[in-house]
Length: 581
Image (tube, rainbow, N blue to C red):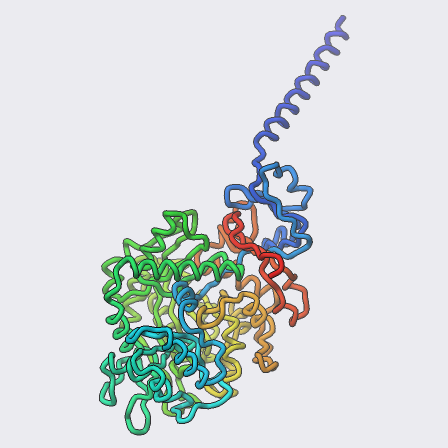
């Protein structure tokens, strides 16, 4: 009898145990979320050291739910799940364009594209064709010319820059403004200069230059801040537009910019210099859920306007992390190609010039005070060795004045040419070098002409030297200065091979993984977002780019044949390459 009771109790306990296990399993099954999107059967590079490569991942409510093998992800799949069979293709964290100009990217699609012209004669021909379609008095604009990339030097010229006469002849009634590829100079015709009231007596503005011939007359080229004289005249002419027309044009630019981003696998974009009014438009689009690409926006306004309004414009992760505003943008010098980068010693190609300081040092220091006192990041355009030195000095002074401020992550945009003594300061100060891989190979053929062999070797595009100091480098294209092609920029970063076949100081190129990190997790870090994006980890935003080739392993020259197959933002496929394209 006693034995039967023991058997009964034991059996009952076993029954309860099995029941509990069954209920737990049933509850667990019911609680398992159903993935909205699954990528499987691929090579997925996570950039997470604990699981650097997996073959599948699941997405739920815009974030990564799980990663692992295709079999491990299977429990998250239901009839409603969209499944993308990668078929062995490469998936990586979405590319982050760490320095570009969003509206200018869109605008570049709406004006003359001068990036592929071979000489000045072709530019004149393009303008002549545009005049035939334009109304009298209508401004004709374009962008992308670069005198160093032409197959012949125009005649006559000043420092390789053409005179306006041939352009003015084909456009007598239409003002013309053609912006240099760098954005740091422009070419205009006689009509534009007439409307701007510019003649041989017009003085150079601070931080700018009106290029003149031997007779003292302007040839039509305006460097750095001198461009503002023409832009003011164009703004006056366009001031008759209604607010609705102005907004419609801006919305079209945004639409075209976003399309270009998605086609190139860009899921996040650092917009390097934007007005309060444009930010207001971004806010509206985010609230209406009409913005797919995530924007990290840098404010570009005067110190006076910053002091008045900056408190109203700090935005962190608005619209499910589609809009962040926490950075102020400044420019201490110009561009190397336009002889505007601020150097310690004169240009080899222009011994009369050491470049231009485009914003006064005292004004820059005031911006630094505004930034650090309002917990804003500061990003400064600095290309020449003097420009970079002065920027680092301003940063260091601000840091010392506020030792209580930590993890500031202030940035130098471009960092193209450094004095050897300043390279180590980036790591010591914790300053981020926001550099563009494609600038190295695009500019390379004429950099030595500008700086000389010694200066170029010591400090031009020194990625490895900076990384060895512990500095973080984030990558991008500076679009529309360069094409937004992420593949071309990645290729430039890992090869430093120029179009002429030569390699620009190859010891400074990045490894494939370093280049990928510079284009993903480092860009996230530069925006204080490394905890939510930049790598493919559970809980992070499902921002993913799928490529047709494995850019981490294929031979160098095959990289350029790689295509973007999918661009996924927050688990939504916003771009898919059509078959047969």
